[in-house]
Length: 255
Image (cartoon, rainbow, N blue to C red):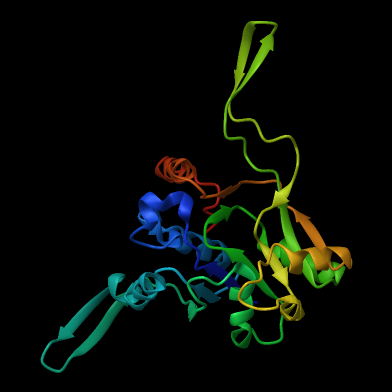
């Protein structure tokens, strides 16, 4: 299966950093979060990626065009303009980098890469979230129910510590409890190419009419992920992920 990654948004809530590079290129442990997401897929045998570019997409292109060079021992014949690679730590990935427009919505980006997907079901996710999700089990769940689409349901982590009170007396603290138990769309999908027929054009938001119509018709099922999940929406989120990585306690590092 191929994996489509939406990597073209503006990342306005991280504007302090995204003013110079797209959000998927913000680094965790010295590597873009996009690279971390791809490693999660590769750990489950998915090594062919279609990345939907938009805002500052050239930064992502330059990263991958130079990726092998940066990870290799090389000999340069400057006169002939020849480069000889001796040893490379680059992954055996096939990456298609597709311009899908700066202002295109999520559904429109997905529709624009239709020609690169073939006729098989495919994974789709966003370029700003990591999880220790079992993608092999997700794909098996999708095949088993036989519907057009599967999303991943997660319970988001709490953002603030909570107090246990007895009247006005503070009895204890609880560090960042999970939310109220409500599940949200965790952003890891398995989709049939047939869902692309529900996308009208560039202005279509994938999370609105396409998903809603699939749900109304009973064509959307939810795979429940109970492990780690974190979207990088704010600088606080980024700092949290960096701290986990620095401590060697990054649950999404399944490779």
